[in-house]
Length: 145
Image (cartoon, rainbow, N blue to C red; front, side, top):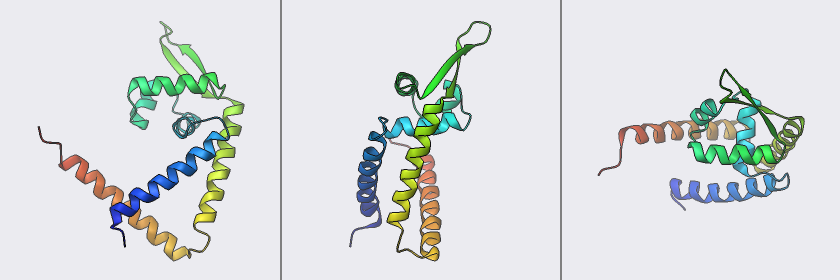
């Protein structure tokens, strides 16, 4: 039997492959899809998006440029000096995000088809606890050097 962390690494690889296939059908990357979700939820400036996605400015700019080129979002310069950009999801972006979400939900239903509600709840509790443990470790254990 694999250790818990080894199993998580294997699961993550499979999940990433499935997500890449799913989003590729809609001509998006997984990262672009996730960014599209942030914009759809009202996070509409680079500053807010960088803070909430934890992406560096160059990565965020590249992903936003990709979404603009694919007509998934629009941008509007605002403010006195027109340097602040507001991003808005387009109808195509909304439709694409909804389709990917439906495919994601279908995948989730397939994966957990034979799991009871109690098993699903226990997994969710365990994953939330694991997430908090990693957060504590990340804060307490800074790299030496």
